[in-house]
Amino acid sequence: MAHDNHNLAIFRGAVKFKSNVQKIWGVFVFLSIVTVVEVVFGIIKPAFLTENTFLAMKLLNWVFIILTIVKAYYITWDFMHMRDEKSGLRRSVVWTGIFLIAYLVLILLIEGDYIFEIYKENYIKFDF
Amino acid sequence: MEATVVETGTEGKTWGGGNQPLKASYGKMMMWFFIVSDALTFSGFLASYGFSRFKFIDSWPIADEVFTHFPFLHGVEAPMYYVALMTFILIFSSVTMVLAVDAGHKMQKGKVTLYMFLTIIGGVIFVGSQAWEWATFIKGDYGAVETKGGKILQFLDTEGERVALADFATNIPTARQVHNESEGVWYEAEPTKTSFTYEEVKAGFLANDNLLVRTQYLNEHGEPTVLSREESVAKIVNDGKLVVEGANLKHNEYGPPLFADFFFFITGFHGFHVFSGIVINIIIFFNVVIGTYERRGSYEMVEKVGLYWHFVDLVWVFVFTFFYLV
Image (cartoon, rainbow over all chains, first blue to last red; front, side, top):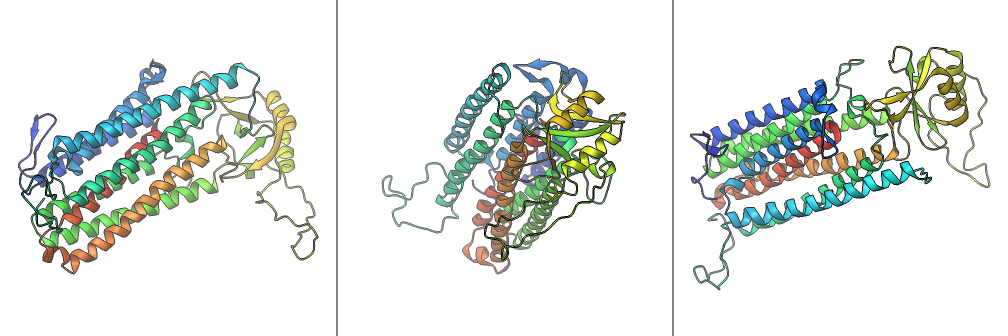
């Protein structure tokens, strides 16, 4: 990343900052708002989000996870300067991580749910 | 990047080495390599947390009820506010870090020094807060009784408020003789002593008719199941085994032992990353102060350590979500 070729537009170009320092503060404000929204949701726990589920998970938890990924995106793209790196570097870091993590999480959660069913429906008891 | 200090002398020749097809220096590439592998380590931790939680999905503690403390506000229910503040502090120290990197690109030594210093302060506050979280978690709140099956029973009054063991346990005087290693042929160190024995808690529970037991199993509303008085008495008398106060790796008063284990391992591993980040930041800070990078003509080291620092922040964003929110 050279000195002065920062990409200063965020939100797909909807917001464009005049300098890199301004962009940093802009992203900080955005991340803070997202964190505050998360905490408010976590304390209020709106009923329509906790009672409805999507893919066996409460909507509220989906909201948390999506907001977390949004935060992770802006930390990586703007604080870690991914936005300014070559696409080859960006893809090799991001897609490698996303693929391996998504696979691991998927397979472990399915296995965990399976073991839960076994404990619940069968006579196997546990103590650990 | 022009900041690279190592020159091979064959620049410009395609196969002569020293090419940077990704336009990132060797050091920065290696920092990205490390970050990817470290991210996989953390996701391994978090995924196994998810695995264990799905395994005990009907009896996992609710984070809001576990982390309710705020420093200097005793007895005030403040679910998650302190963790949210910690998150905020860490994100802010990321901001000062990225400002230091930006000032480094402009070769402004004074600003880099200031922002690095602020970053270190933010990190120290965060680690201190985490130590406080640990201390509160280990000390515990109300205390509980563990059953023979290793389940946790917590106590409520009829209004549904949690009741601490100290509020109802009767004191049964007993004589204890303490053995020393020098006196016995066979000696085993005494396990941690709780403030009350199981017998004292049981006697106190039977004497107070307004007490109920709450199991760790969640009902259809996602709240722990509260037993009726008769069921509670039967549960305590038949299944109770020992008193649990606070948390260690084997027992905790919040729920399954795995809950505390993962708490210690995940936040501990992250806290260790923050700690090592602070140490590296301090080294870089003094290098900035004595002008190493000014002479080198590039502040790329600040950028590399910045990558690490942001990564630690990134991990915390996920830990915060999966440990405290979801």
